[in-house]
Length: 117
Image 1 (cartoon, rainbow, N blue to C red):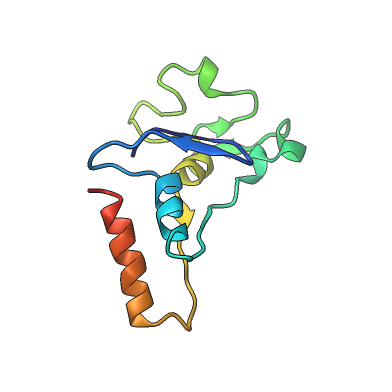
Image 2: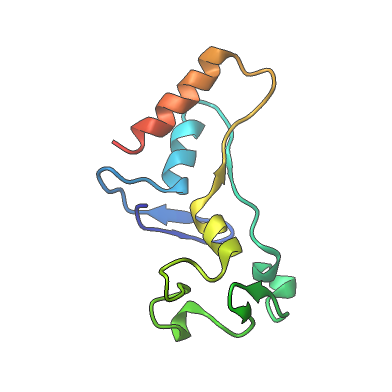
């Protein structure tokens, strides 16, 4: 995945050959006048719930941030400890509608593929 930084209102990314990120893909499909969006932010990352306990693969994740964990939020096996945040960082919701024609679907598919070239 190319490097990206997202806030609640803005997103920046650095394009890399052969890689993409949700922000780049969303911008590309937006150019087709199609609508996508980031995955919903996990509850424990919402401002109202930031100080509440939440469950990770290794138990309670409250008070643990990437700043204090060597290697970021990855376990010894290299897999994310906070799966919800990992999905939020890397995932997106693509356009979907039961009225989309096969041609519209193909345009979206080709646009997403082109982001990885």
